[in-house]
Amino acid sequence: MGRVYNFSAGPAVLPEEVLREAADEMLDYNGTGMSVMEMSHRSKEYQEIIETAEQDLRDLMNIPDNYKVLFLQGGASQQFAAIPMNLMKNKVADYIITGQWAKKAYQEACHYGKANAIASSADKTFSYIPDCSDLPISEDADYVYICENNTIYGTKFKTLPNTKGKTLVADVSSCFLSEPVDVTKYGVIYGGVQKNIGPAGVVIVIIREDLITDDVLPGTPTMLKYKTQADAKSLYNTPPAYGIYICGKVFKWLKKMGGLEVMKQRNEEKATILYDFLDQSELFKGTVVKEDRSLMNVPFVTGNEDLDAKFVKEAKAAGFVNIKGHRTVGGMRASIYNAMPKEGVVKLVEFMKKFEADNK
Ligand SMILES: *Cc1c(COP(=O)(O)O)cnc(C)c1O
Image 1 (cartoon, rainbow, N blue to C red):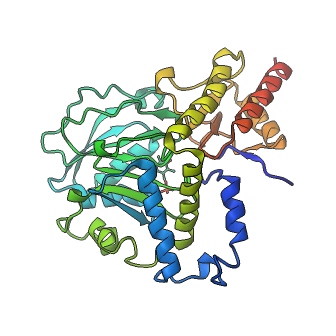
Image 2: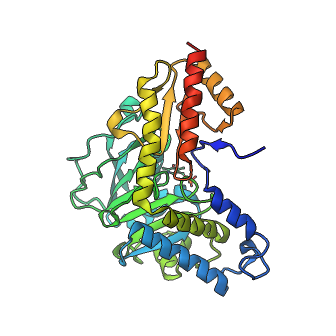
Image 3: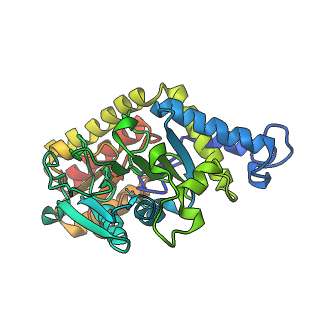
């Protein structure tokens, strides 16, 4: 069997070129006679892999020198605790609840201080982004937290919230490297790489230097202190070495593709194909208000659960896999990350048209 079109929300599709290159290097990386998996993380070869990966990411995102880039473990979910532990100096933080991941981060922060839910879109099943232009930001908030792209619900912040001068912290797991960003607007940008960058097991944290201090909450584990990781250049202990190597290859691929401006155009083109179809379809419809639609995760429904199940089953048989919606939402969701070729979206829409005609 050949490759399928994989619409999984994560772990998700990776560029075929990257996988082939990794396969070629599997037994003998660059004349070392061993796989990167077998290599010391203190070796000269590995040093070059991790340093090149960091530099390429810095180039792609135009990361200023006063920001550190950390390659860590524990997934995005561990950052839900690490962020308050490192940043809650006043023990106050404001959270904008736009879905399950933001809610989980908020609930975790509640263990460490006073976390305030200052806005939410729970009233309409997280199908929109609340107006964040004039929120009741707490006077003593250490930071304002958002989940920038909501993987499960398919919404994205198109403008960042007005934090009234407070540090912005953003979980960008599912929109990482999908378009250019202005890093200077954030204190912390972080994400698990398994959505849009690489294999599960790596989380990347981009953090402004002044936020990295020894002044963390009492009891913060050494490993979760950003200072530990920053001082050791992500090599305090054994890093997720192979995962970082694959991330590095994806960064090279992104550079070769033309960088984040080009990725944005490609992603807009792909998403438009799918959304335009949904907007005129008599069977399928999108679940998100138009202005807040994600370019990465596209949820849709037929309005009939049996028909949804039939669609998912027939799509899978036709080579469009992992298109079932999140278990808490139902329906369908097509995740169309950087590595999903336009052809995959075009063919999916053709398939949906045929399904619609057959199920009128
Ligand atoms: C998947 C996801 C997470 C959880 O990531 P883990 O690496 O599994 O902890 C958190 N936030 C967002 C936005 C996600 O999409």
